[in-house]
Length: 482
Image (cartoon, rainbow, N blue to C red; front, top):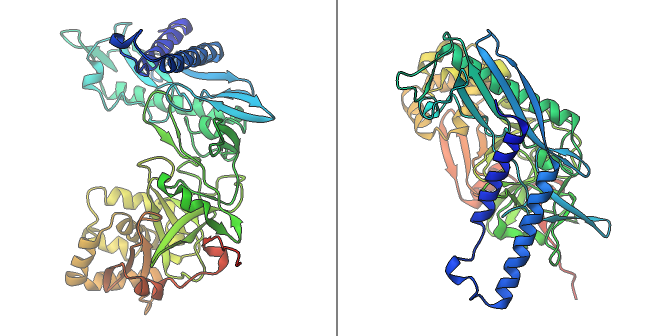
């Protein structure tokens, strides 16, 4: 088991590697660069050395160790954190105070640093160099944890050394012990966040280990560039979700109820391409609103005021509100919601089908349709359990099951009609509207027992999504008449 000095030395070595990669001057050019470039490089090196020194000075470790359940061996969980000026944080941020404002200094090649977590497994203090190769999936750390987990097995019921001593082979009991340690590390992360959630740091620190603590909603974030300063300041509202960086100028012209609309830039990790937007995947917007585009419909997720807590989650995503005029809208998908590649599903909290989905029904849907969404083998349960059938229908929308749906219309139309009656009541054949790509596409889906139709024509869309009131749409700034 590694001691704190060893853990710190490994972490600082990884930081030195990251800093070395950011060095832009090649050896052959040393001494031949123009003075201006040399001065710029000198300033950058001084900033990097300052970053390294400050990080090392505030690095701390939270340790938990003991025997594994079943007494199969010992474990140690080491969680790095940083004792910063305004509180402890999982993420390292370099903030300075200038003119009663926080200025964010560069950290490596980005804005923040979070150590990468990992898992090491051994047998009676022996580490096999190829253990991870044979147990890659089992030894995969939870994606958003920064803890270092060390497990040293000493019971042959859980692990054994391979004949060539190149790896430690895990039995089902050993795999279970690894899983327990990952869950324990997650629990320790949660406990730390519950005890340490400074509003200045929590927007980034809270994304490590958990993203849905009720009292850890984001308060501070990177502001828009002002001269050469990067201000770390309170979020301003009304505020939209993450947005395409090329729409910044357009956003500056938008208004909500006559007020300027705000956006928040992305921030990047020090030594990787990891990018974060200001809100997590579990923070639901106040509402989905219409966004103006020439001759087409656009949509956006909007917070009208600073959130005070996380709203209750929906089993299939997030609950939010849509314009009351859009009675058919069941929900939609928002790509690149909290970070590049992360999609959130936003469901209309007032729609009947959304409120019929519950935890048991959604879990049964996930288990029953893990391989495909063919409903025929589950006909009886779908037509007798409304929470199950409503979950299946949402799953079809989420996965764009157009081919399956059209096949059912042709060959099993009675099933869809019975399903509709089960969910909505006898004689009710209302179509649903689903927004498959909020903010990045103007297409909408019209789905019912007789059709699965993609609508791209503006006038046809307006038949199902009439223009909402001023409380549910963004508008361009009105220019004063001369």
